[in-house]
Length: 119
Ligand SMILES: *[C@@H]1O[C@H](CO)[C@@H](O)[C@H](O)[C@H]1NC(C)=O
Image 1 (tube, protein in one colour):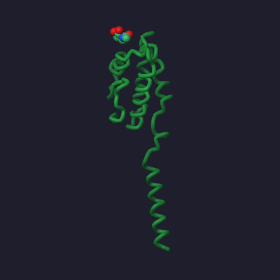
Image 2: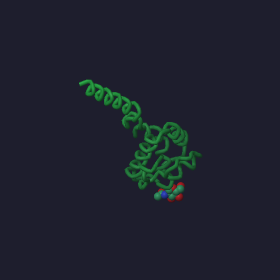
Image 3: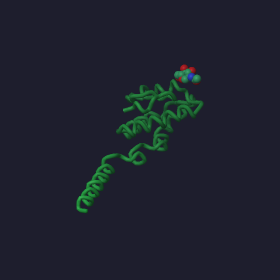
Image 4: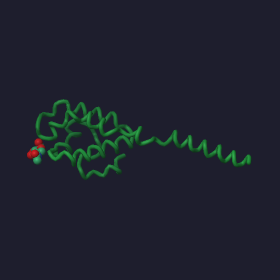
């Protein structure tokens, strides 16, 4: 009996530890809505409708917000789906954005980016 209680306690402690250590994706990762709100100033630029404007401010803000691997992967997935769903996005402009803004985003903004490799 005592050993069962002990085992239960160990299991409980382990569960609490796991919950504390493993980030839950819904809370840890950057939401797509957040990514879009950072990059909304870029929309007219990447769709060939207007100047760069405040786009770099958004790119830098996003870069500063996406600090962890789950954040970056989720931002990547979001950009990827944006790049493929907005048909009018000029992909060469989108891919050139980080360079244009002097930000080192370690992946290409493109519909074919493998976001699972983003660190
Ligand atoms: C995309 O932008 C580049 C650079 O401004 C331009 O040369 C190219 O013609 C554009 N592509 C399309 C499909 O509009």
